[in-house]
Image 1 (tube, rainbow, N blue to C red):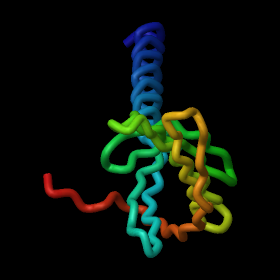
Image 2: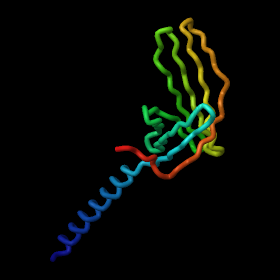
Image 3: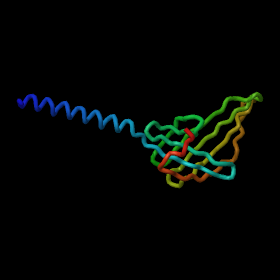
Image 4: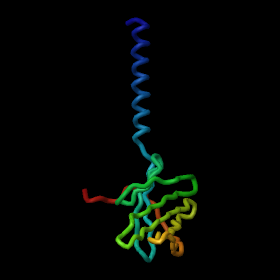
Length: 132
C-alpha cells in the first residue's frame, strides 16, 4: 500500500473520530434535577445548563444561569377579572434556596407583590421517574 493511501485512510479516520466526539459532546446536556419543597407544596425542576432552560414538567422557560444563581420568571395570562401574576425564582446555587416572589398584576395596572418565600431545594443526579 502506498504512503499516500495510508495517509488518506488515517486522515479519514481522524476526521470521522473528530466528528463522532463532537456529536457526542453536543448531545450530552449538563442537567441538574431539583426538588424544592415548603409548606405550600413540592416542585420538581429540570435545569438544562447547556440550553439555559428550566422545565417544571408543564413548560420550559428561558433562564439566566450563572455559577452562583439560576433565575427565571413566569407571567400568566390574565384571568376573567383581568388579573395575571408574575412568579420569579432565584435559586442560590451555593445555599440551595429558591427565593420565590409572586406579584399580582391587577387590572387597574397596579402590582401587588407578596412576601418572598425561601424554599429549600435538594439535587439529584438522576432524572425523576416517569410513567412512560
